[in-house]
Image 1 (cartoon, helix red, strand yellow):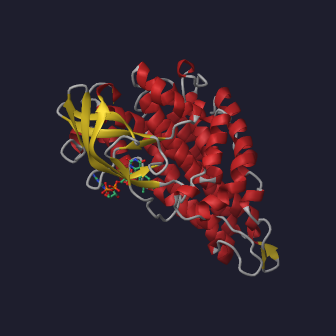
Image 2: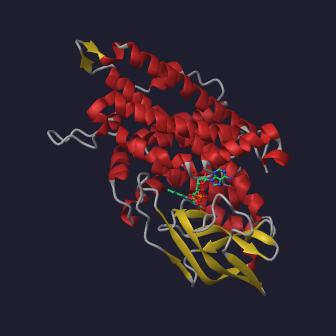
Image 3: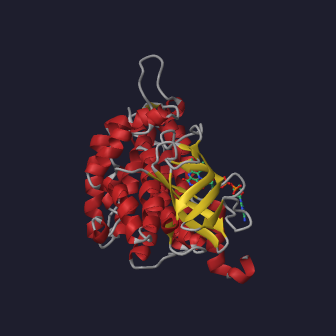
Length: 409
Ligand SMILES: Cc1cc2nc3c(=O)[nH]c(=O)nc-3n(C[C@H](O)[C@H](O)[C@H](O)COP(=O)(O)OP(=O)(O)OC[C@H]3O[C@@H](n4cnc5c(N)ncnc54)[C@H](O)[C@@H]3O)c2cc1C
């Protein structure tokens, strides 16, 4: 029994997709077809591999570009699809990808949302030089705020990467850490301190003075390659600033708010995937002469998880709908969706392992090579509670809307 051959999609039976706008609903169907055809056959290899440049799914990335998936989040003026509900459509795209591979969903999230949507705020020249190739898939994007000593705390004092203006260029020095796509990316949208304050700069990774470290080795999300980016006297053209110097933190936080809706969607996709695999097992495996699903313990457990899945998907769509309506920081919904859906993914993956018993703990069975996939979801899901704003910070954001910033700080 393996997901890649497809257990029943339980969401199709119990989820009434009333909240998804029609354009996003069409995208859901399209991306599901794409993922079942192009991603499902390689998802296991991506989940079980070791981090290396060879593991990056380059052929799939090209296929995603060819199918127009990178155009979903963008305006028609930038050669995007120009959808009325592009945030909702992007969220369901990410959910459908994460159902099979959280690595691929994360690659998409960073390439399109973190890098792509930041570039959307750039000048016409930046959009031509970097955003158009992001949508076409001819350049791979990365986004860097994190440093060895700064991440949750991105205050000007914590940020050590510095950019100093010299005539028509910036000279940048620093080290960024855990940067998704870095080993394969063409450019990085990078937060650096300047005299005016934190500033977003687009840096070509082929520029002299840039070096990218070897891929980090991780618990899960193996095909989502991360590495350090070291910047030593890197000259960056003055026009590669997004917005104005000093506006970088606001730009980064707006992008990360959108990103956290994407990470909420990965939580929904992973939770659904683990749920479906647990249901398939509970409906077929027998103990004491009955299907295990006949025991009320599992009926109640799955009823509870189904309710939480419903909540997680609705909350994610609500945050996306508010952003589609023009709200730049749709809080507290985005923070609620991110923390709720990602914790559900971890909890549901752990329950799925329990439901499968010893088989849940297997990568594959020695006796006959049968593959099992829920352990990989458990490994992959954990990072979603950490990146793009840890879940502690999501709670702080929610608390701020309750108590006010004067009290929470
Ligand atoms: C696989 C992976 C991919 C990543 N991709 C990227 C990327 O592409 N670009 C990028 O810039 N970064 C990326 N990151 C970095 C990621 O966003 C950070 O790891 C994350 O924000 C947490 O920062 P930190 O690891 O420095 O932990 P810290 O900031 O040191 O936090 C450690 C712990 O302290 C808690 N904490 C901190 N402040 C508070 C507080 N005020 N109240 C309560 N608790 C608090 C945190 O919640 C956390 O639990 C990635 C990380 C990983 C592992």
